[in-house]
Length: 362
Image 1: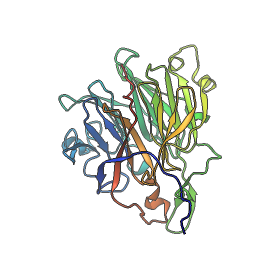
Image 2: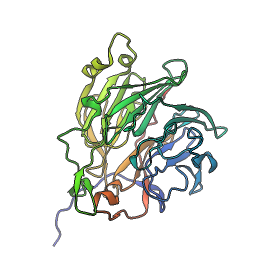
Image 3: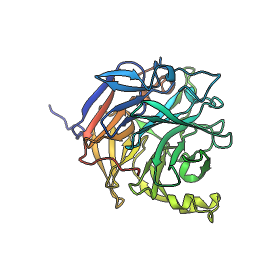
């Protein structure tokens, strides 16, 4: 007898299969180069930033720069969580310096600008102790080169033990500051109960003890004109935004900023997000093995729903007008299953045609 089954849709292509460590970030440059990052979460990470070259992973910019030196924490990469090609010749590398979500190594948390033509580091931005806290986990970054002398970077602090926040970096001066620190929009939704692959996602220790797994501000996206910044806690289904002009308005105190945050409603629970050239936002939906679409009028729909989309992490739009994303089975890690690692290799880099290019940053 034939029974009705769940409907899956969307034409996915596997771009790369990962048989080693677990990836999180992916970014496709304006010339079609593909970069991947691998945070230090317990796997044997050979290089925390790599480029896919002829189907192989090559340490980027070099193996030397993927070797961390505790004596010079600002120089080498330790545990990179996000990489973003800005479409203007730079790969931005966000180093948490916090393997396994530990306290960041002093001086090691940094945003690094890598020149894609020379494949060399152009500038390193480090943070003061009042910006990167002991609880901070730098997660994702978006760039706007139109504001200030050299542009700004917006970074999410997706802490699991402290306040969530957005971190703003002046790329000209290197000055950085926190906004929406511990506010509702950057914090864990206390009523949110994530359900993935039919069960509640929570920390489950080998001894049988359990605790909630709660992650603050994570996904971030910026409108094509740089005027609106979108963000979402990982432990929430809501999409929020703030007008970027308000962030830099000296007449608005930081504690007043939350009043200007817009709640767009439920989009599904997301890890990564990305904006297309026409302002459409694409977001993962890790509870439903899907990629969601948030249209500029606020309406939402599902782009693809596929059983292979096992935790869609970072998203990137290439010059070929494909949406790229990693499916890395984050929910199957040992910490959620009494010490048993349920991940099945390979992890996958997928793409799906959307017919739109990436939003510009300049």
